Amino acid sequence: MIRMIRNEGRTTPIVVCDNCKEPITDSEMAMAIWKQPDVDGTQAEVFHLHKGPCDRAFKAVIGDPNPWQELTKHLHYLCSNVGLSPEKLLKEEAIEQEIGTL
Image (tube, rainbow, N blue to C red; front, side):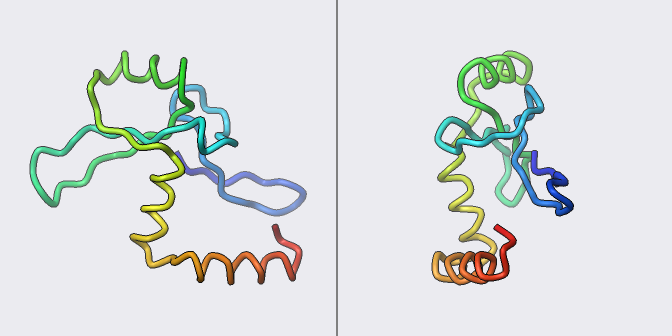
């Protein structure tokens, strides 16, 4: 799940594991999983999980198999689907670095 956390007087978005409720800090050791919709155009809730014990425990509850993606790829697709190109992302990062919010 995506949540906001307050840190040093500022709030910032984080990705939290839907199983253990701890922040995900390594996108390569995490995944996004969902139940496959049966009909085109149908939306599905997405869950974010640490790989390993968290994804195994979560799958035991919701059933398996379910489609999933590496979290790195999932976030890349998400950025693309909202029109956030790599160039825009780099520009935003430069602005945030300049004003000291990253």
